[in-house]
Image (cartoon, rainbow, N blue to C red; front, side, top):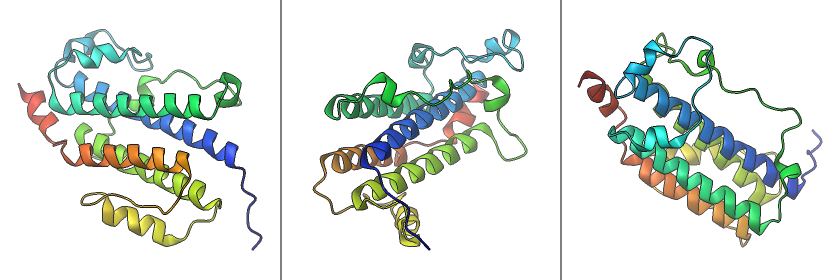
Length: 201
């Protein structure tokens, strides 16, 4: 099989988009958890298909520990995006998606109760999003789009217990990996099911 060509700058932009998708998902799940708790009054206002209020201050004002923790992870990602943008002299044109992404609608983020409660959905999203990010940064470190199965196996072993490691002198790789490990450490401290207890209060 012919190896896919690798473009370093395009990979950076892909990672930037991945980070934004991670933020969008974390925000949506945190807002979803809040609608089951402190923001439950908004259920009488929002209808299926409405846009999510896109203001992090909604969540910052809440007391739910899980929501607070997700907000902190989002802010860590914002800092990483800003550093990537500045260090690599990215432009708005660089990071613009080919087509404008539609606003997140309620049907896209409402909890899928047949799959599990909202807190479990939030936890699962974090796991999956950070896995994608690790695969992308591995590709950046190795300048290859064809990562071995061991990459996923390493992530699965490290997610709950230890830092992820990549041997690289690349400043972007180390910067992204450091933030990823910071998020992993903080995520291990989140008791996602505590949001269920907040819902009962």
